[in-house]
Length: 222
Image (cartoon, rainbow, N blue to C red; front, top):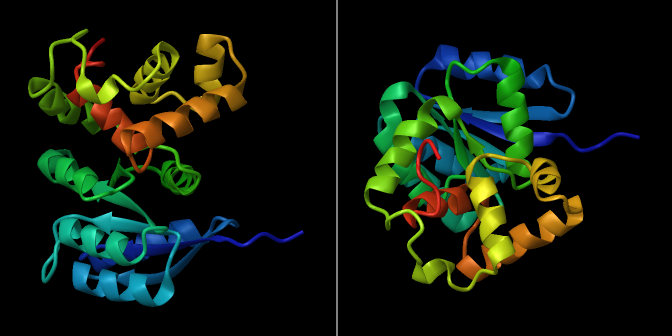
């Protein structure tokens, strides 16, 4: 029985990188690169015309950068997921990309396996936060957050169990891993995550993880 492949738009101003990503992704039976774009303006146009499932978005590009392109794409195609491709020097851009609605970020030197898995995770609503750059990003959030343990108005609507789940989501645990940690059914965790997103008016797990750091629920190293 055949399944519809995940449709991907690759956006990067370096042709060699675009073509390399396309070759790697097209080699996966469940992934299909439907188009490539060399700048944000092209990406917005391609996304509007093709409605890909996932956009692999570079940040630093001519004509229109990845931040504004992300905002425009999600404004016209909210069902499309945006996975930001970054380098170690792009932390401030990644912060703004998540603010713009991006579903996560991944290092450009990730392996083909990591890249493919990240796309699959993004499509299913999971958070993709590259550990190598998350530390500095989250330190920035925590410096502007409430003191650890302090109550936050935004978290007041959550139950104690939901707060525990939010903290584990912020640490990058999957639903299955959270279920084991809390000794509950995985479906129960899924329900908790859905309620957390609804109560806090968040798009996905990535924004939930960011909020956990911003409110002081989690701090780097804890």
